[in-house]
Image 1: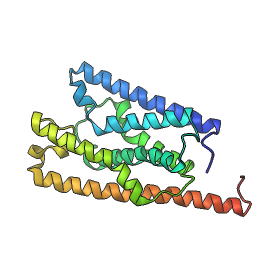
Image 2: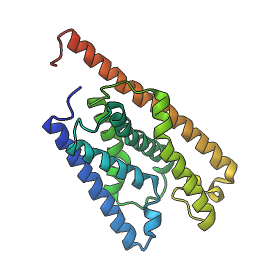
Image 3: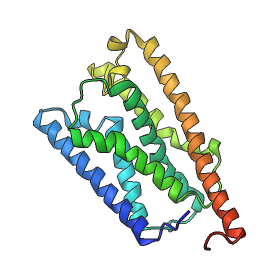
Image 4: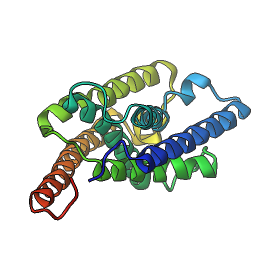
Length: 217
């Protein structure tokens, strides 16, 4: 475990925040060039979760180790780890074989690279204070739940869904959509536990190493 105040931690956070932002802008420009709706563009979970990740990385760059309650800070940091984890897994399992409307560069950065970066950052600078799985799940799942509600209500109203697996006309009815969503929600809860426990494990091993004098204070 390293300090979030170290220059190279702040440096890579800034680099990947800017890289993700460039990818988002590139994809937005492509979307505008294809005369797609801007509201539709910002309705994608991938876009929103990467924007959250950019905000968290920039915050970690500008305000490392600050912000009041340590648990609140790490809960905020862990949210995009979950969201981009969902993004990466869902893309790999459900979308990678679908025709892509994203630029190749943006697709690689937003769907593949950023999920890995956010998880690596979490492991490298794990929570300094214990976080409960229950509290993390209660907070982190608010946004995906709200996004799903917004997406399904808007989709039913205008007959447009950001992903084919959410479209009941493609999936063969709302029953199959709901069954798939239930699986994703269960997976999100499991992934939440993995994120919390992995951070806790790294932190505990680091503390044990320091007590034994194997790691610097």
